[in-house]
Image (tube, rainbow, N blue to C red; front, side, top):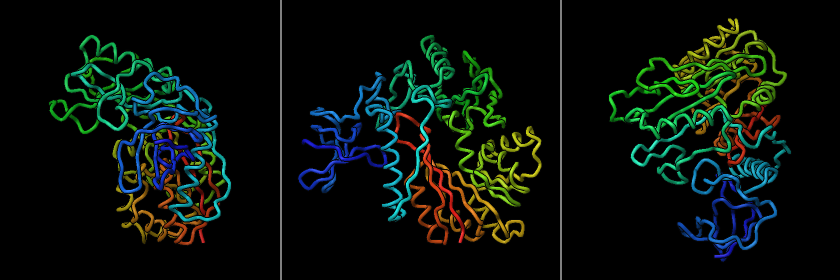
Amino acid sequence: MEVTIERILPGGLGLAHVDGKTVMVTLAAPGDRLRVRVEREKANLCFASIAEIIEPSPDRVEPPCPYFGRCGGCNFQQMNYQAQLAAKVEIVRDCLHRITRIEDIPEFAIIPAPNEWHYRARAQWQYDADRKRLGYFESGSRRVCDVAECAVLVPELQRVLESLRDEMAQDSIAGGAQYFRAITGDEDASVATGFSRATPRLKARGQTARVGRPADPASQDQMKEISRTIAGETYRANAESFFQTNVELLPKLIELAIGAERGETALELYSGIGLFTLPLARRFRLVTAVEYDADAADFGKKNLRNAGLTNVTVERADVGNWLAWNQLNPKLASLDFILLDPPRTGAESRVIDGILRLKPKRICYVSCDPATLARDLRKLIAGGYSLDSIVAFDMFPQTHHVETIVNLIGP
């Protein structure tokens, strides 16, 4: 089947139409003329892979990574960087139009990454002990793609990967290890080992700490903490903490999320280790931060203490439950600002309902998934809020993922 790629869809697939069929093609570039192999078909929808590039798009480039196409980590290396940015803007616009049903979407910018390569300061690597493989899952499978060098890792994290591969070659990785999570700080790194269910060393979360060349997992009782300074604030975390991958963009992300907001009261939902909490505490008299994960909430409290900030209450609770319990809390009766930064699945309906009941003057929604963002925005707009600004961030070059910040004004 011959197709011409029209544009890139949410999820990173190329869109084409031929003979009454809609064809979605992996690893395509807009303008490619391709011969494709249909992998799966349902009614008039086909999912396909490239069999031959008949005429490459002007935006197509040779992927520099030898694992590209097999490794599931990156799916945009076939496009030049400007085409990647344009595709991500189109992905956000598509979701806002199709899901939120906004007819007249305002123009918005995408903030490019300072580095298209070697930007990832956090990673998870899968380990296959039987086949001696360490890397990422192959695209669309649970097979491990053995990766010796990853083109998107910061150099410090690449050195950690090499140390782990040395351990693998020497058969010194702990039995039962299934994956490794790693994060770099200003000066060092932290690594957590995830064990399979069969091993007696199992913990609910990773239990190993390593700096530089990894130590024996069995010898570690406490995971090492790293320190990272962002826009003048210092954050402590470890390898099991969620922390944004592209740290060079974080000062701008914080600036555009909070902007010139000031006031009496602010509420932060899904607050994590406090990336936004600390700057919010310097702009509002009273701040409440809600986070379900106990370790993240503890780091949030620690980071606030270390910063000498005492005007924040950190609540360790499920966000939806907490909103239901506190809908009549007089401290939340006149909220100036709510910031939410939910996981990829977005906010639950009861969370959006809880926000609407609180009626904050302004809302900032920070999202890593345009589709769930668009779904939640539709409910907020139906509840009387209007778009004030949209900005996208290329936190994940060489992939289809995009971070988006939307600011809304209350009725």
